Length: 257
Image (cartoon, rainbow, N blue to C red; front, top):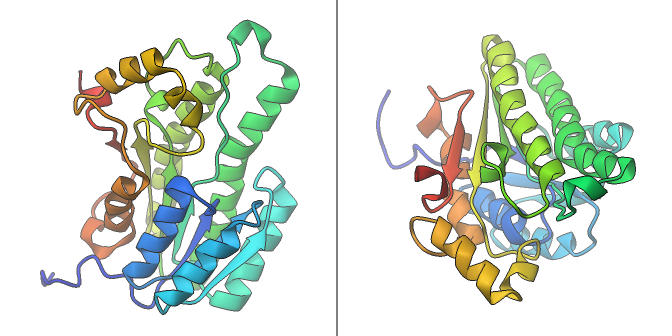
């Protein structure tokens, strides 16, 4: 294989990202577009239209489809519509997710179903819809799941259901990688550490907790959404043609201790 400066380019590719209105999702969408991909976004927030405009300003095609990823039929229909309008998908990024801070003894069935519905069921059925398209078209593809450091470590933060969902996604990633390797579909995941987003905003209102969690990162700080983008581009591009079934931690050294 020739090594050149286009190794990370995504020109001519179509990416679908779940959840792209802000934070990590928005950064991923803009990063994919900056490297040449057209980007379809499935999500529930009308703010996502701002991401669409920013992508179009980069000279790429984009669209937003209102889809609750916990609803399997909505996911199927959204993926089909994105394919009809943009083509592809060549790349799927399962970014949509919800977090909770409810003590394990207070978790209800409704809370359990809501978190697992978005974080696990949504990831599986979006992957299934994209995988079916990739298999039918016979050109392979990339599926990238956004997991978490909490997929492999515990915490005292009342996030047991979130831990369970992200741990499941890490192993789902491995299973899909093995099953779809014969179709040249590479399936990997990225496990961020604590990133400065709306989801982590309440932590910054508790200085002692914020300081504690910062210290748990070897780099001594929270990450920024744009610091996840490089890993996504790597896994979406020809730079990673021999990588599948991996969970790449982008966590400032949180899991290095």
